[in-house]
Image 1 (cartoon, rainbow, N blue to C red):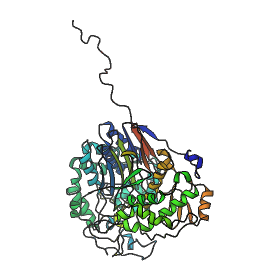
Image 2 (image 1 turned 60 degrees about the vertical axis):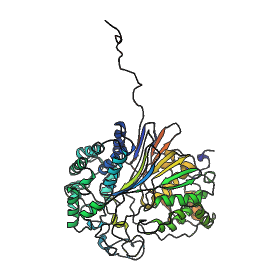
Image 3 (image 1 turned 90 degrees about the vertical axis):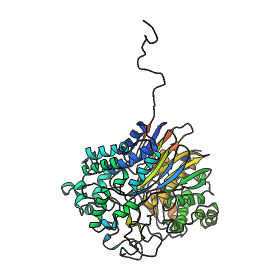
Image 4 (image 1 turned 60 degrees about the horizontal axis):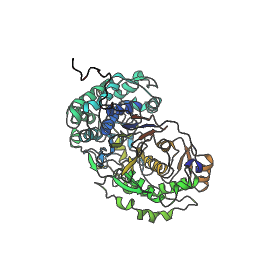
Amino acid sequence: MDWRDRTGSPFTCEKTAVAAHRGMAVTNHPLASAAAVEMLAAGGNAIDAAVSALFTLTVVEPMMVGILGGGVALIRLADGREIVLDGLSTAPAASRSDSFTPVADDWPDYMEAQGRANRVGPKAVAVPGTLKAWCEAAERFGRLPLRDLIEPAIRHAERGFLLSPYLATCIAEIEPDLALDPAIAAVFLPGGRPLGAGDLLVQTDYAETLRLIAREGPDAVYGGNLGRRIASHLEGIGSFLRFDDLESYRTIEREPMRGTYRGVEIVGPPPPCSGGVQTLQILNLLEAWDIGELGFGTAETLHLVLEALKIAAADRRAVTADPDFVDVPVARLISKDYAALRRPEIDRGRAGSFEARIRSTESANTTHVTIADGDGNIVTSTQTINSLFGARIMIPGTGIIPNNYMYLFDPHPGQALSLEPGKRITSGITALIGKRDGRPVFALGLPGAHRIPASAMQAVLNLVDHGMSPQEAAEAPRVFTWGQEAEIERGVPEAVRATLAGLGHRVSAVAHVAGGMGIIGFGADGLMTGAACWRADGVPMGVGGGAARQGVSFWPDPRRGRSY
């Protein structure tokens, strides 16, 4: 029976999937997807394509990602090896647990500091990891030189590109903060007016910065003159970041989280990312029920999903810290036995009160790429500068927008998330690969802060339990809760929402939960299907075709082989 025959939440896909055999790229901007395909067409692999797409996203999605940001990549290589490359930001050595003065001891202002110092401006900048991580990935696993990977980004920065309504809305949304910094205002508020949809955005200074990095590599920032210039400017206006922080920054290669759901192996990122643990924990809880038979989007299914989300949220504090600073009970949380212990707490007839007192200011303003090639290399990677336009300042003359990752540390001393020198930020990043009998069947990820794990987990349910196509799984209505309100997308019918409210859920109908998902499905015949959803400017692009059949020439010479 098709999932549509027993669904409580019918929907129509707004975008169209793309299928190809030789390569597939799904990013949240068409020019980034085009850059990835350009690298695949030039003989590069999925790692080359992902790095090129991310550099391009720093130009065309400057509000979401930058070379002074942070992120994580789950990489599966053609030989079957799987690694997580952690390029998350760290707290500068000069910072202390009491560096910020909190304005409240209770939510919702618990994470706020006086003067928004941990959120906007130089003190909000943590030590960046993106540039080093991208370049290391390309050097270790790619085929093409760095200068080739950066070239599309330079092209779009120098020549300019037309703003999408999405980017224009983001600029207008935070115009007052952008106006506080002359350098960033000059780019995005020329003449005091925010750029609008269809305007040309040219970033000449940033093009020159990218050219420098193309010549010198990541050392330009992590030990070179550009890094000195960045650190000097930030220190001069009050930042904790110093040049020594840049010199000493290191990425970390981590072993992925692994678990199973109905015979499908799920591979994801470990702490300090909470997404892998949360996804596996929730799937373990739900595995006892026949979710497929209950139907997609029915009140019965969504009630179980919401209750499982609340249990995982109540446990999330245990996985929201750098494992070098906090003991994280990963093995217990993702075990089937632990799920069996907690599952009886779910009452199928009413909503439980697993109140989650979780403190997080992780921003939904993130980007994601999901890319694969015909050789079996796969990259699913989430990257960000945290809040919209990061710290909302720009390093003069460089076009670089730094992150505001200090906003993710608890300004209160003595807590698991409290600020400590060298501590890595935590994140809900949930970049996943699903495998059946050792063979990849899907790869996915999305932006959306603490709503990411819930959304990624529901995509797994859509693919595994409901048998959806990648396009359907990406666009299907979503739900989210941490134990307070139950956010339910308006694509879920009102009757289903009413039933959930009758079960005791505090239902809040919302426009969308989390951001634009990118999924690649892998067929047994090697066909890859790429899908992007309506929640962002995402575009899938594939590479098909191939070289001419061996021995074919355009116009055979009839005299060939004859003697005259």
